[in-house]
Image (cartoon, rainbow, N blue to C red; front, side, top):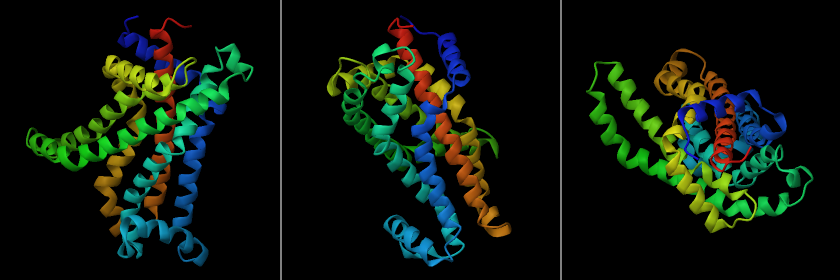
Length: 280
């Protein structure tokens, strides 16, 4: 079945209207870990909190970034690495778990608990590989290609619009990469499949539905994109003129917006995948 913009919009609206806590709960566990870490960063004057945060921070940023207020300026970078790890490694179990709970609505076997464990195990490797590939591709995009793109776009419009356009292009580029890989976990939780077949089918459908997928992913991601822009452009002002601890509040909101957007993207993708396969 050929998919249209109307199909994508309808699926996105149905995902929002049909939001269920039990299906979102695996993403909330990822969010909860981030919130706990952010709460710990506000208690660094306590030895127990420092003993938990410092080793993790040193692994990524070194000793110098542990000092106040430098630590809070660096915190968004560290949380980004943590976010990538959580969505790739624990996410290789939690994302398929959320999808299986969604499919339980229409799959009688799953609703009775039959085959859920084997499908969850079978989805682990494809989801892990897709997550790792997405993280690596985004890192390469930001490290090697984004500089050329921003240089080309910065002068295409007067300031500050040129700077914003350049920044937005880098952000949308990351979403474009993730949109291609979104359907690998969705294909992996289907019945009667295997890891190789799931990766192939997920990528094939990802290319087929890429424009529609990018559209609803950016739509759901707008709150997180807005918070990210404020953090990157106004972060020095918050650190220098306001309380550096406010960075933690912005990051907590960003983490929540990302968790909800990621969940809705996967559920919308699952709806489109069902629609394309002629399933109700």
